[in-house]
Amino acid sequence: MNPIPLSDVSLLGEGLVRPECVLATKAGDLYTADWRGGVAHLKPDGTQALYTGATADLPEGLRPNGIALEPDGSFLIANLGTEIGGVWRLARDGQVAPILTEIDGQPIPPSNYAVRDREGRLWLTISTRVKPRSLDYRRDSSTGFVAVLDERGARIVADGLGFTNECQISPDGCWLYVNETYGRRLSRYPIGPGACLGPKQVMHEFGTGQFPDGLAFDSEGKIWVAGVISNQLLRLDPERGTVETVLSETDARHVAWVEQAFLANQLGRPHMDTNPAMKLRNLSSIAFGGPDLRTGYLGCLLGDHIARARLPVSGSAPIHWHY
Image 1 (cartoon, helix red, strand yellow):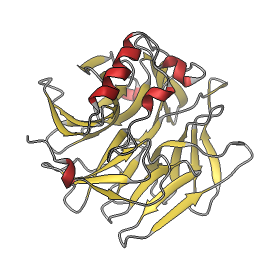
Image 2 (image 1 turned 90 degrees about the horizontal axis):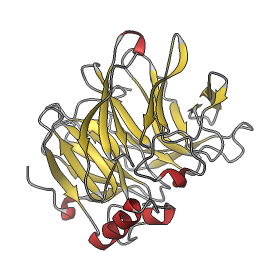
Image 3 (image 1 turned 45 degrees about the vertical axis):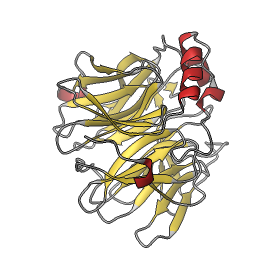
Image 4 (image 1 turned 90 degrees about the vertical axis):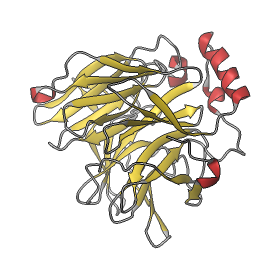
């Protein structure tokens, strides 16, 4: 597969703030997490809307990282606030309500990503229990976990992960895939009855400057991974273990500086800041969209836009595709 030239990448949206997670629907709507306190909506007619809400339970407001679209048009927010994490529901009229804020009586730390499966179960990733989070940008990071909420309640189903980031259920519903950002791994767990997970399988270990963040599946069973720092979009064959670089805007000097700090266990928040002149400002997620599911919409941590590119293969339709 030939890499996509940067010249073929266009930018969408205006004034977005940390559009880390992007969702696309068949109707042509795009939704992104937005640190103004909610979700930005890029409509098919080119206009934008911003849905925000406030509650006394969240004194610093919503800090959305991952978002999920519900059938009624509301959003589930994985809250990355400094003190209060968990999952919160944001309605388009501004109402905010807690969905999952504690497990076994303990408050959930700042949270990364939330997604429902086709059985209605809610899966949540927490990157780290360390405070502040930047102290766990380490090779030996191991306090991340995955939780699930179903009719039996909420519980931790996978623990000891290396900075848990985005997770997705495979299209056949048999596997939970998860990126471990500072463990630099793509891992998966077989999903058994009652949302019980089997033994962890490491599907890929990433190399120099590659820190996996978001992921999605294509129609051929391959996995697409968005990498922060390296600004790369990768396509992995989970069975053969092969990797293709589909899109890249890598600043070699910056990556070398980050890699040196990472290997010395000195990586900090300033290392995340990439060149503001770059088109891909810390690539963080991918959503397949467009009428044929062959348009890639790319989220980022530092830009005020999302990126768009035509892809050589179609994606697997997400659960919210027809919402």
